[in-house]
Image: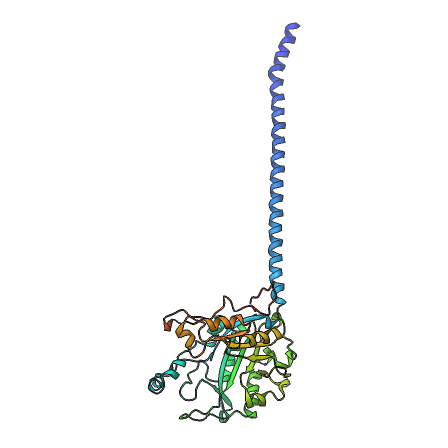
Length: 365
């Protein structure tokens, strides 16, 4: 009997003890697995929280930028535009004649631009057109100087505006685009006299503008009292400006409430909103004062090719610093033809105005 008990104990020792060890090992493994799972779960939760926080920060940043931009008024931005935007190079035959007669005048005319759409693609948000009234044809030719400098990227006012409208249709969120006009009727000795601008001529000009861009216009009556629209409300729209003084301006702004074009009306006049001050060095303080008072101002970074030939940036720098909203130039591309890199351009189409924009300003198209 004792032997049987010993044998049984021995068998138990052999058979039962490994089972107990195996069970303990399984318990330890399960416990380790639970710990590892809990650690992985905790790590995953941490990563998800971090990702969520980053997404929230990104959303808040985007929202802040969007709110900052959407809360801007159009007089709180600044942009660059081209001078005589339509202009192609002067015909070679006239270049040779002018070189003999007046080299200085020739030098002032030696600039040119690409098609209007290409300029807009490069970020220009102001264009300029010189128009000649042709009563017999019921239209306006676009060119610089009658007879000798009429090569143009768009031959008539209607063609120019139609090209711009097509670009706008393909870029509907663009910042508002200025288009200014010089009504050309000056007599130049030795050249054919152009037709004089009359009330009928301006009525025709208004009708063409209305026909092509009417539904996209920001009108003088809409901003009476310097009540400028928000940038978000002005996207895809245009401001037309008659860049004339004297009798032509006075003729045009009679009945300004119904006109599509702004004028360079004197400060305090009911029609006054956009001012033309082309000399930012001499008129720096005046431009800054008008901009601060709520007016929009156009000035020039260069003229007659002088600054580009000399790579002189003083006028350009003053133009930007003055707070003038529209900075006009012939050199949004580098002036490599004069052996330097003179250029007037912004990193993007618009930026916050250095004088009128709020401190937390964010401006983008």
